[in-house]
Length: 484
Ligand SMILES: Nc1ncnc2c1ncn2[C@@H]1O[C@H](COP(=O)(O)OP(=O)(O)OP(=O)(O)O)[C@@H](O)[C@H]1O
Ligand SMILES: [Mg+2]
Image (cartoon, rainbow, N blue to C red; front, side, top):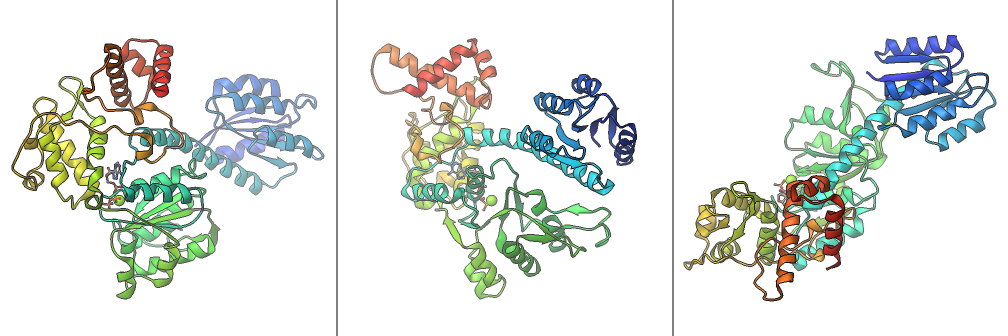
């Protein structure tokens, strides 16, 4: 149900449209005067505005209504209605941000359809606002870390192919960061403001997965009580990420192949094709070649998905990245008992560097999380690590704090939208380089600001409040920091 403001000086028209809208369950504010509608806009905060262009004795006040509507926050979607011969004004209205126009006389069905489309556009736009926020969170503070040659190769590849429409197959053991790479591909593409929809193909039984992906008609099977849009339609304009694609049942493999070839989906129980504009990313930790050989994966689908493959190295193959990853994970944690950041002892770091990490980065991240919870004094020692990890270490232990590598920009996947220094700054570990006092103080200040920024998820106003400085001071300090 939506709030709709309606303005037209023909009373019969207003009545007809209002009736139709109410029948669909919407709340309607009807006006026959353009000026009155203009005044009421702010008060009613409608989601949709339908307005004639010429009201109140043929003045183009519809354009004023449009302009005012566009300035509201959030701006309602606007449909303009034009009389015969005013198509130029309609074009002007579209340029000024109207969503669509209807030319009088129009069919009721056209009106209904335009309204439906406008309202679902509205949903998509608010989803975008949400996504933009999510994007900032994810890529300001959880960058994809890796300085090893193998990871640098991955980053180059991601940069090269992100903004294409190619299907990409992401390969790698469990916990190597396949989903993270899928997100990076989406958020570094022009599809970034449309949905990114991950779906785990192994999590649902065949029939549910089918209706999740493609949607169904009411009554298509027991339990299908309503029409349902599939995720492919939901993702229109964006990206779908098919995780564990190797587990997809054969029937669905054929249907997926068809989507990739024809760019259209058919709902279960419905033969009408719907065109979709979706980029497909897929991931698997199994060998699809093996599956093709034993007949459980379609060869033609394999070739379709495998246009470009990105293979993520296991953590074993990039052990030199371990200290960097440890620093990255520690930087996001604060000891709630004293508000301080965590450090790690040399002995513990040695143990981490000696373990072979069958669960890859996820296992390392979990180990760090556990160690932070176990540690007595914000310094992680060998004994705080999971027993399995400690077992891989050699005998000698060392409780002096290890110095953590800082995270120069090139060791992380470039985050196109963020230049937030918190994401790349040096950790809050004490400096062991000797120098002037002012450098030391400056370093501590930078580390402290970054810690608070991390805690507030990058909220600068909140950070300034916690630090007890003005927002302007914070910005100045951040600017100085990025000049360093
Ligand atoms: N290079 C990296 N830098 C920082 N964090 C990473 C990196 N790689 C993985 N991670 C983190 O490790 C965890 C596992 O990553 P992700 O879920 O992307 O792995 P996956 O390959 O999809 O695993 P699975 O096959 O089990 O689904 C996540 O919390 C992710 O943020
Ligand atoms: Mg995954």
